[in-house]
Amino acid sequence: MKSVTIKLTQAEEVKEFVNTVNRYEYEMDLRAGRHVVDAKSILGIFSLDLSKPISLEVYSEQCDDLLRDIQRFTV
Image (cartoon, rainbow, N blue to C red):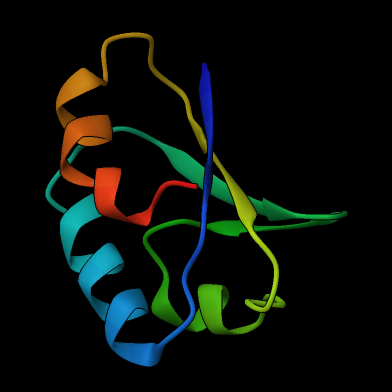
């Protein structure tokens, strides 16, 4: 499992993030405090507090291509 901190501040960024992660088969979650949602769910993401950075957890060790594609969202 790999974990990276991301920041999504605008609705357009959330849409772009979801479109990007949906191209990959990896299982991944977003964690904000004790709340965990599917990283591929736009509604789940909007249920989180987006005013703070959130943690993306990718359940794969070989996900460098994904991390490269979402680099603009990382903190």
